Length: 404
Ligand SMILES: [Zn+2]
Image (cartoon, rainbow, N blue to C red; front, side, top):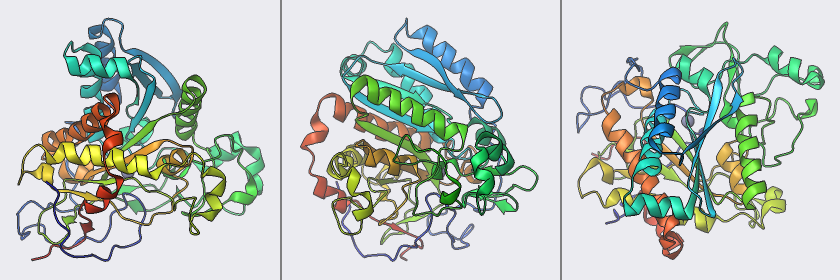
């Protein structure tokens, strides 16, 4: 059942996944579950890069040849970025996790998903393998993952070494963390980029000094090897299949409320990352209007939402909201790939991995998996195309304070 909107909440304009100002309610939250945003818990319970490689190899073995594993590229520090592929269907679904290295539940969910779709003989898994080609990039930003932080591990000097034309740039990229503390991590001496602002809807874009430092509302440059790897995977799928039907990006956010309630949000969803190219606001993206299909993106988000709602009323899986509205983020993977014609879905799970530690891990991983199966099954049997895109507006909004 859909929750009725009770009130409109003024949303702060802020970047995707940024820690927004959160009321200090650590101990007296109405439902007692809000944890201190500045707390740093161990992330040992999450799968690190070496463990992931072992697990992927096991998944391949168990799948009897159904799951193909490849190294798609290398991070700036030389770690392998893996791509796993399963299924022989005509519809292509691409999913990535940990573009922000402190947002770890997506990787756990993707490993479970690969294990099931690759090895199960259930009618559901067989149907998915028949209808879908599922391509997964777990832990796409391994340097950030190993550092348990948002940004990668690359300096501006290293960028200029690879793109000498950028010596002439007025300033480094705006999304470069050169110094200072962000989300409890000090970048001084170990700078890096927010890789999720390094995408460009022009998949053949070549970095130009004049385009720096850029801005949140401008496209990125593919200056990081991590975004280049994802872009290359995307292009190779376009070449093979004509298009990438669906792209899903798995993130975490702060701890917020379901509008009009004191329920903490379990996960937020979004279908919209740039203004619609067919509208006045989106006019600068007009070249992309032919492929852009926000109605399909809304249907895909609804498939995830409905799957979560179906788990049961009054469960945490009911506490699903829409992420911030009216975004203009062409430098995100989602923004760039939406403009290239993919149906796009953002998952934003509650809390950064280190603010919750293992406390909610099982629950949050289950939320991600449930949403993913909602989408994948809906695409496999075609039911997603029968959902009414207008119902997207009935999903509750996110509030930044409880409504007591
Ligand atoms: Zn994120």
